[in-house]
Length: 244
Ligand code: APR
Image (tube, rainbow, N blue to C red):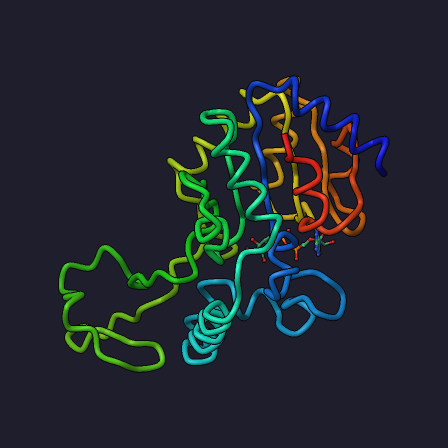
């Protein structure tokens, strides 16, 4: 791994534009559960259809809202780890050179000091109305509940994340796609690489001529797209890789 690490550090040195695509694995060492890890992942415990689709929410709003509130609560007690920090510090030392794209909704990149993070899947801490636009709604009059709702029209609050079957925020995805196409090196960190269109960014980068490097504790679906795979935890590998 250490010879490979030096090789990748060489690629990083040469790269004028670096794009980084992160997934749940980068927050694992902060104590945030991933989705698809065998024992500990959320999708070992719940069905994604129940907890991460509009249909699931409409069927059981109380259960789904409760789960997101549990996840918000969890975030209060966790901190960014050395992987998040290494990315934020690299960007600070090399202004304009790194674009950080994340599938995570946990806000840990931002809390580590990263600016301009492209959040493909929204923000766990945000609320929005389920049925918008809906002119009779008055956000100021939201009534507490599970979930909170508009007392006038009954419109429910939902978390500001992107569920399965929903479109990604267009401007964010456009910017991510541009960064993927313009970079010389893409780091793909802590993602299983099975959720599209996010995972497609690695393919875009490769097709546009960038080197692609995966950082992951296990095999991922994007290993085949990568020029190199660095096995290890993000909180160990990223500080070693990005100390330039
Ligand atoms: N360091 C690096 N990688 C790790 C670590 C770690 N410490 N721990 C786990 N991993 C890897 C796992 O091996 C796995 O490949 O992180 C990946 C986590 O994969 P998923 O749980 O599937 O998370 P992610 O790829 O981000 O999921 C994508 O799926 O449910 C949706 O919207 C949700 O954004 C999420 C999307």
